[in-house]
Image 1: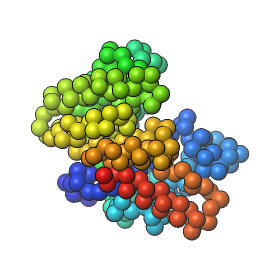
Image 2 (image 1 turned 90 degrees about the vertical axis):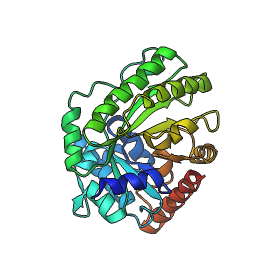
Image 3 (image 1 turned 135 degrees about the vertical axis):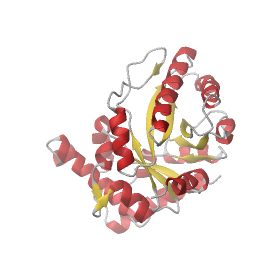
Length: 296
């Protein structure tokens, strides 16, 4: 599989990135919304079997394809499994023309200076090597900014880019995700601080260090235009962050050059009880609305 071809798709193709990477703590909640109650599994391995069945149903649906979906973010357990007899990453690219990404962070540290940096990732190099071997194109890792605190914002962005450089060195393209909590009391001010820190870091990258950004839909339309135009940035994607799909799509449609990377908003309305026809129709409508908002 050609990394150059995948990079070109990520940079230029229409569509959005499907986030299929809820893991650990958020999994029972995601399954609950999907209509699967905790009595369906008795241990983590069985729970992940149920999750993989749900994700396989999404990925193999006729409405899920590279014409509207640029990439999909997986978590490690999904990368390690198969879809229709081939590795998940290989299935996504070879069958669906969807570029595979891997979530690599280990969750959030406690709040310091109004922000949560990522927990340490001591095994990251081994995970990156495994991802490269599995045919993964890029990674994703998330931190959270909860208030407009300069020290907290700086710590989050510095850590994201430090680890981002390590990921680039391993041959992957990192999606850097410093989320601003949508309930942040002074969200616009936090976003201004975030923009300044990100631009400082982007300007310090070498020409061949290519990254992506995943950002909360901003209060000020067009705020991230300079990030979108930056030569080191392959694409800027938006997280839905708890907004409903309609509000997320509405906000996204006003951010020119930003495309979606929604998880909850993608699977909204899907349930295990639906027939294949109902499931595919619901997923098709979701994908259509998110792709349309991404196209503006």
